[in-house]
Image (cartoon, helix red, strand yellow):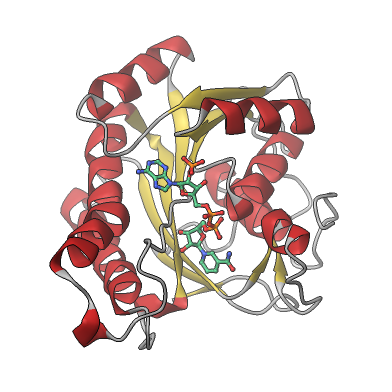
Length: 252
Ligand SMILES: NC(=O)c1ccc[n+]([C@@H]2O[C@H](COP(=O)([O-])OP(=O)(O)OC[C@H]3O[C@@H](n4cnc5c(N)ncnc54)[C@H](OP(=O)(O)O)[C@@H]3O)[C@@H](O)[C@H]2O)c1
């Protein structure tokens, strides 16, 4: 398993998030778990969310860290804005939010022209509306020293045959993030888009799918912790790429 935290060669020497609360939406997911672990290691209080109470129970038991809190949250819930506000109040303010959300849909791999209307609409809601609603709910809760970061894949930039709706969501949410950063123009929290190559995650490993050349999920988290703390040399850039395990993240 890759869930022990070893510091990558490119990591900064001191990342201290003590006293900061970071919400990881989709924190019980594959990449989310690595992000949660790295944020905890940096001293943050972490709120990991999932739509499933059972998944959160198992996750909290497995991570077993007093700084970890788990909460049910669905980005498509009509009451999302109120729920986000309640979270911020409960934790005395939020320093950061990480959106680690993806949904491949039930249609499986399919050519674009064979997607039905319901399959298209479902993908639109799951991979685009979710991110829009997360920004609308959480950005107003974050201070100017805070940050919100969306995780994305390379299909934000590249064709993704047989997964057109997923790719459309990736490209659209990259656009949302960049536009939001320009609209805020430094007047709100820092806004980030982190585009990833293949990541080594626990669910993948449990399914027997692994490659030592892929990026450990905790390395993704180490970068995000540095961005949240403002110690990353990339903290002034909106778009980051992390596609090569050895060289680490770079500005887009
Ligand atoms: N794995 C990779 O190699 C890889 C590569 C490139 C980019 N990424 C990016 O990394 C991020 C996470 O991917 P992953 O591989 O970790 O996938 P994952 O294990 O399937 O996790 C995705 C998470 O999205 C959450 N989610 C889905 N719909 C949601 C909704 N309506 N409201 C709230 N949460 C919702 C799910 O939470 P619950 O089901 O628990 O509610 C799940 O934990 C995605 O942005 C993906 O594009 C991953």
